[in-house]
Image (cartoon, rainbow, N blue to C red):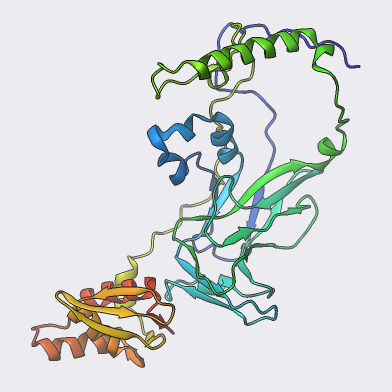
Length: 363
């Protein structure tokens, strides 16, 4: 049996600042990161914000877990679909920004329904510390699951990839620009291996049992109060206090991770502007059934999804024959509608929306 638990003592002042030795976490870039830059992870999640009265944000273990590492966000939208076959070449990957220099960093590299994101760094950590490379906590994309790996970054001289496995063949999976696709969490394997797990009776720790019983009674009474305000919540854990009043030393309500020190990357021009000035040739994907509607047309793609297009958007789509560049389409649109100048901005914006809808590709 372990020695009895020491009782909590309230510190003179509670602070969110914690003194601990610093250590080096270095990301050696193997090329221009092109927007794949690790940064301290956000505690926010869209689904948590969308819960009634944002109640999920009150769960401190959730928000702390969200922040407990560095995340890499994809700088462009990605769509992927697996046909169920294991061999390479059976995952169709579409990058929604065909002008992006890192568009080839997302690929069907391993087969078996895996989408691979290249991570352009060799990481170095202190001896005994590795990186748990995983999906961001409490974040998911519909239809795909992040694969996790523990990398010995204290000695390895290699890069690694972040991989997501599509779990439902035949279904499109989407990552939006800005989604976290990789989460980096330092781990001391020796600390884990040094643990001595045991299951013991709560009664063997009288002070802990008393604190638990007080909390359980308080919780039961709170839940049984039918007249309480639905927005009311118990804040003991969030405040770092037991129901009996003792404060927890070292309690955190947020994490303050340092960012990777590097020169800021230049911000690229908007996608529509880059598409309009690119030399890419645009091609319509698949056969589309068209039905006229009061404000334009409704198109049905081979997957059964419908898309509403106005007359100029349909004209631009029909111009995407595999040879047409943005400047060619703008010239055709100018001639067809008798415009004084080629509508380059309109064409660029429309092409970006057609790419996002999966109706065209650009090569």
